[in-house]
Image (cartoon, rainbow, N blue to C red):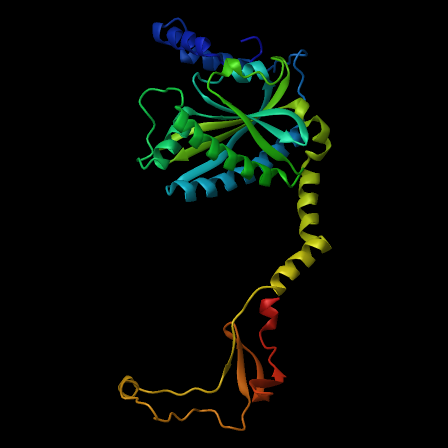
Length: 334
């Protein structure tokens, strides 16, 4: 495999054929794996991403998986489960060779970062989504095929929403504006970087109902190179904490809260009657309340007693003069 961790379709067929004909046995493969203690390193394709950067990308896309899970569950109205299966670095050629043909490949920009990235959706996943959106049970066709024009229009809407979730997940590191450029079906026609360039592949495992498949996000090293210093767990955690405590964010939340409408009413008094008495009420009947005329009235904010005051007039309008502020329980509403 020339140092590659990704098998092409022909290599997979040859291996299955060898197993079925008895040329090689599964036990021999296991023994060989146990004996091999040396990890092959190809100096022509050096690792571009450190372990810490891979870990950061993993955590970042765990957030992306949660956002996508929420969107698809609500949009498809079915049980959806998405999690990050792996984050690997390999050459672009190895990634392209691993994709089925036909496939659904969305090429998108990550502005202001230069260059393009790829969102590849397994045909089983995308046809399950299409079938659900068209009112079906969410089952893919028996034979994989290319998208029709109508299906491609639907897929573009799904991918655009997916890219919005992608942008939300990445804002902890850098603010990006992803933009879908084109949808391809043949991996060989998708060349965003030279074949030997290193890329990072984030693989998501998607389960929609009873249908399972993979979604791959391919980001070239050249695209991420300007922000490599930010792809560390220390920066990622520090950035998320700092954003929560920024004074401008606190002020913005306070301004929005101050504009919120809440119900406020004055309670003149209470009384209890039976259902029979309630049914017998007629015009001009008098109900005796428990409150006395000299007592302060309760002012209800939301569902809590917050003030007490005396009723009166302000000009020709009914008014209330606040005489007491009730602060009990405020510590629970900080």
